[in-house]
Length: 224
Image: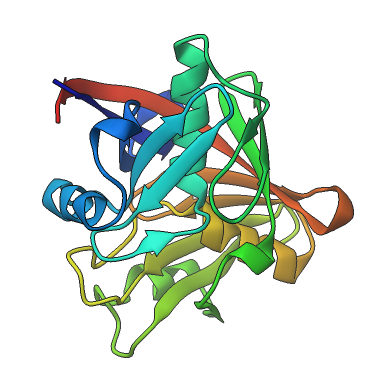
């Protein structure tokens, strides 16, 4: 019997909100390819991670409809979970490349590249209220990251994320990959409030990377 760990990633202060994530630590219990797609679709989380080798950090990430080479909230969550179990490597290894990871107080961090994130369109709105008022999802096709400044001087941003892939995920509560793209475009550290109240911290890193961090909690563990 294989366990499924259900986390919430990029929680607000006190563990509020956050994006649910499914993590299967025994990835080899679920065959690669179509079987993993089926499991991810059945679970219905925005992403599910299959850990193929905890010691070397090899992971495989699926939405209900597509396999992802890189994603922020799955890697932050998996790093936190492996650390909690005393098994976190210094690098996670999704298909996109090697991803450094570390802990700083209550925040778990990873470092990634905006080039690893495809088809995320950033659209700025005049106010946080306009972002709040968007329908779910807005008309159109393709991944939309809607954002507005809440406090430009302080780097505080209001965002919402809409995958618009035609699967069950109409709105993504918190997405580190899109936050990495926005940070790379704005070239500054950000304190992002996404969805219903999730918090994502970002900052430009060395050699064109972007660092993204957040709080994680374990919601439950159950049989897959």
